[in-house]
Length: 300
Image (tube, rainbow, N blue to C red; front, side):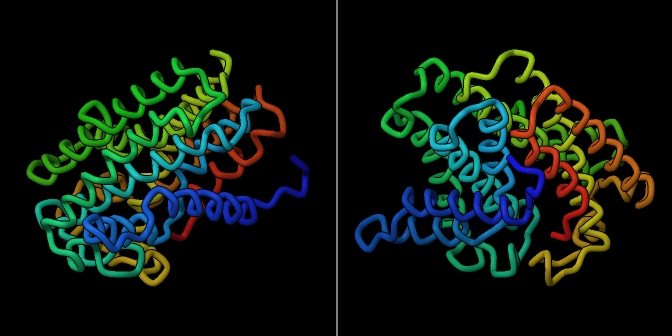
């Protein structure tokens, strides 16, 4: 990695690489699977930052692994993330009409197909993770451990549990402790496991895995604080969805509890703390250092 490293170029290259692989997992279908594949592809290939798979690949690189071996896990993580967005947008959840600048899945395909598209993505994620042909050089035990950790991060102990806390928080007065718990599970768990998955596939040493876990915990919370702030003051055109929806729905957010300036200061501290955990890594971790700043400074 050279000193003239460009994060925009890095993200663009990794995003294209990831999307080429995602295309291959859900090809265009005209037969009996055509309807469900169309619904899946609509959301999966709609763009987005691809930050979870990028983090997975970056963690593999930072621990001297090969991105080819980490790619199936990276794609599985994006499938899980996309499924969660489809379900979050449903009328029973956030009831959003737009995502990434276009109509949400249930607005195009109906609520029934949107639910099924999410189900298909979650299931395909674990089929991808456990396909030995896609990771021939990776020890089966590593694959099993990665699949287990991703399942935990995506399930009731992680993302799903965080969503459940979030739904309940709308119904009662939230507090800062509860908000931390929501974000640590709903957003942080999948971001953290993205780093761990890439490092585990690369065979990272325990101390490196511990450092990346701590980095992931901090950028996960910073990411959600930034999201909360963007919902207040973000550019609707850049974000591809309406702003101000959190306040209208009575959601508990960092700006709502502690204000914008305190939220921004907290995110800055979290980013600095995250980067400090990368002190033991060499220049191969430069993308992770840059991504931490990007998470705070992004506009969408």
